[in-house]
Length: 177
Image (cartoon, rainbow, N blue to C red):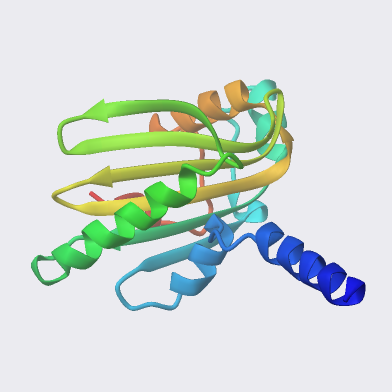
């Protein structure tokens, strides 16, 4: 009888400790070949084109980046219901205690949120989740090693200003225009 009770306790603890939450990595893998999505995997080597306009600090920040994974869901008239469902799934994934919110901005139909994994001053993954209820949503995972969040945000701004030359990615710039 004691063995049965002990076995039940062990099984119960095992079931309680199982985590059925989907991670962002799992979501990305599940959907990267789905025809509703656009998926890009960008190794850091493609981010190191002619970046002579970058400062030494920006170059050092870029060196901490390993790769970027981008998953976009363009909104079309026929996929409005799926768009809302998938956007909600991603929002639920990002509500996990695992992901720490760095910032949120936007208004109206356009929103963007930045999350990270790791320590406040040395992150291992930066997540950018943006949505536009007229165009679709996109999520980018920037993975690296001990990335500085403040320096990464500055680097993202230099990308927006055209200072970062992304060799080999001429068609990515128009994504979600």
